[in-house]
Length: 165
Image 1 (cartoon, rainbow, N blue to C red):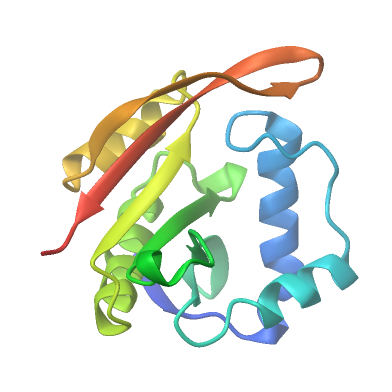
Image 2 (cartoon, rainbow, N blue to C red; image 1 turned 45 degrees about the vertical axis):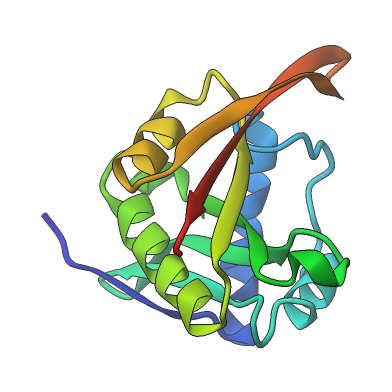
């Protein structure tokens, strides 16, 4: 197996991050987003993911294989210690352990930035993602039925969480 390394993302990574994100949008298995993102969108997104809400990339032999981000869960002060999580893996690297490396690195970043809890939202049928999260200590909180529409069809969303305290 090839060695996976993780690091904080740089603005020079944005084109590859965008490609991977757009794959997730096109594949309809990771997000309710339907419109692919352009470079300008990703620049603004990245500007909002500095400091506590960082972005991690995973590399294999110098190629970015995936990324993870901590996202603001809520602007309310009461939720300042809660982050939501996004993980996207390039199609060519799915099922090869990249997600596990990203999850461990983003959790470390979360703890270093005083987050005590991570929440995430996944499609109930995305068993590969759920397996990753469960083996890393996340628990299912519940299902939001008909949470959104994707291509005209209602989609359920599973909420999961992990507490660090």
